[in-house]
Image (cartoon, rainbow, N blue to C red; front, top):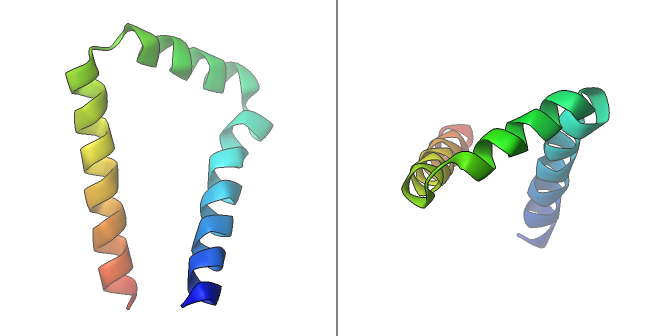
Length: 61
C-alpha cells in the first residue's frame, strides 16, 4: 500500500512539473486566467479532475 501511494504521488509530481518545465509562459498565462475565474468555476474544475482521476484509478485496478 505504501509503495503504491508513493509511486502515485511521485507520478503526480512529475506530471505537474512538466508544464512549468516545458512551457513556463503558458503555465503563467494559465494561472492568470485561473485568478480571474469565480470560486465556483474553480471548484467545478477540481471536482471534474477528482472524478476523472478516481475513474482512471478504478479502471487501472
